[in-house]
Image 1 (tube, one colour):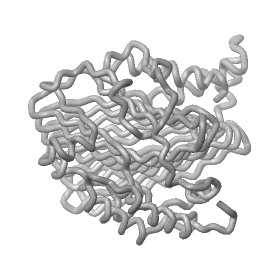
Image 2 (image 1 turned 90 degrees about the vertical axis):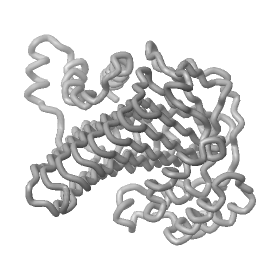
Image 3 (image 1 turned 135 degrees about the horizontal axis):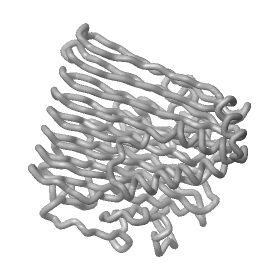
Image 4 (image 1 turned 120 degrees about the horizontal axis):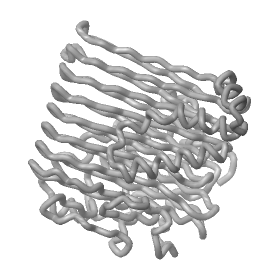
Length: 436
């Protein structure tokens, strides 16, 4: 693809490829999403929402993002597992669900899990009620692209009054050893009244060719449902990842989320929590540890639509090398959402002169009986604290890693599973001791 090709050319190329796909499920919804994609087009940095994140420019460097490459030589996933975590494992290789590599320990009486393609046929009532209803395909180009072209996905359904004790571990491995890879995946999870679920999602890639992974997730919580959700992004330096995740909460539901971003060329997280019931609780944490030329952009929304609810958002970043961090966090408190408590904080440490961060916390309130706050900080490591540790005989690099670890530690509060928390703690500590 030459340098004269524009984002509109790429948009048209993607649209023109749709008929040849001959999709057999969700055809009408796909056509509707394709219409949104055609209207929106791929975003440029002239768009306020993608001002600091040139995803389309990076996509234009590579030709033919309509490629189908579901084949892979990956025969084992052991190196990507979380040691000690007792969980069912659902594996996607290059965007296609692999029954062979997946390992299921949960019984069907606990939770229904199946490929989204099969679920559109076998679980039609529940899937049709929620699928595509919360994904922002009318306003976000990548959500619309995914809505038209998704290849595979997972459907999770927990019936009423069921506590799913062990996590569901969803592993995405993109194998780019032979050629560049384009992946479009979906997740729909429905947790019914007074039930609970834990989801751990991990993204890995292998090989030296570029990867583009575009995925959408809709998670629906009924009354008094509880969700623990953890996302680990650990792709290669040539990977572009765009995630649209929406969690919809009903009355008295509770959510604990944590997102860890480590690697990738560009990582864009559009993460929204919609609080659509009274007495809800949401803890919304994230950490990005960046080096090299990685760009990580977290766009978050917490939308309080009903009264008497609580949300606490804490995102932290550590940038080294020539990496770039972007944080745009919005809190909406609607007129009817009185007695809302909503808090947001974004804190960043820049480890090099070439690293940057652009942060924009936003708070829009249309109710008068609320307690809300937001804020952001960006700076360098505390030199006085570093000097103090060195005077106690601690080597410079070790002292620096200790301070960075202390800075990052509290983002792990929403993680309740001890094996998962231990794994994340080790992952963060190891990364920091290697100076990112």
